[in-house]
Image (cartoon, rainbow over all chains, first blue to last red):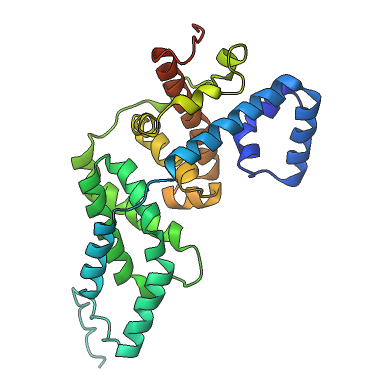
Length: 74
Length: 206
């Protein structure tokens, strides 16, 4: 696997969406190629950052009350 | 002589009234499997409508529709994906025209690249991300073209698999992959430009 092929699978790899065989090939390439390894590390960090920042928000308590009232008349 | 076929009634017959026990069971299963996803639905609704009041209405409408259709939901399967599909249809049918003007963005014309190559000298560990506040991240997501935005939200905010996203958006998995690839890079570029503008990093001209 070359750098271009590896990068094409960047997010599928980080999202764990690849078959075990392709995943193994990429892991091997990342071990052999430090620039790709650093790039993948950076992208993983970016995804972790994105998820941490966006998942905190929840529905307002008032909305839940409103829905329960509509559904069950409470 | 066969009697004429009766005309199809314009309104389907109302579902037979449930016994109190069946009603209680329906409610319990709805609370257990559907209402637990309220936070997820709200986050997605907020990113789709861009407006808390409309997000409230959209989520409420979704839950009412879901409860009415609850008998058709195959219990024990993925309720979150099912609810998100209802929410998205409601959004497209009733809110999009009001909430945001229809988009005319040519997604293929968007050139999205990873900012890693700009940063590999100055900040290869992406330390600048930590200085960006949550509101700025959400704003950057809100500025994405709608098809990119909904894909990123389902993936990175709600953690759906590619297959689940494909089902909710009714597109092939290959489309999910290509949208995610470009949407995330576009988002990176926005945050990178913001960080350069704020002086968090020097950046390099491209």
